[in-house]
Amino acid sequence: MQSLSVYVDDLLIIGNDEGMIKELKEALHQKFKMKDLRELKYFDQLEVLRSKEGILLNLRKYTLELIQDIRGDGPKHVSTPLEQNNRLATIEYDEGIQQSDNIKLLDDKTHFKDS
Image: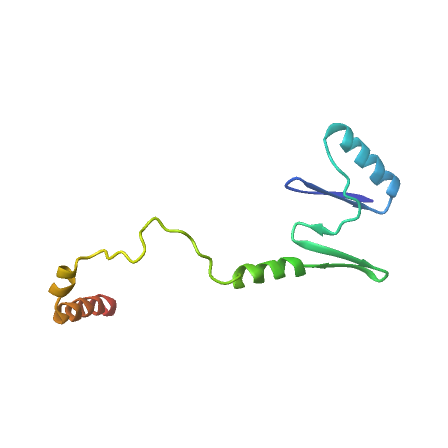
């Protein structure tokens, strides 16, 4: 028995008859440019570990990469096209706003939130 699995550009050939597997690989090699990577270690996100007791499939590497992506290496700085410390409003505008105007704006937002 043999099985051929395809995932994007990866082929996984498994079976219990090494002669048939070799024939299949040779036939595929004649039709397609391919490379035999020998014993399977990773397939898609699965890590394949072999022992005398059997085969273990796990997602350890994928999980560690996912944790690293989520946790990250701290904040990532990006450049911005704006000048630093540049005020976008004039001092006259800032001084012209009364505290009551700010409270009215907050009340309006609260009204929309409650309704």
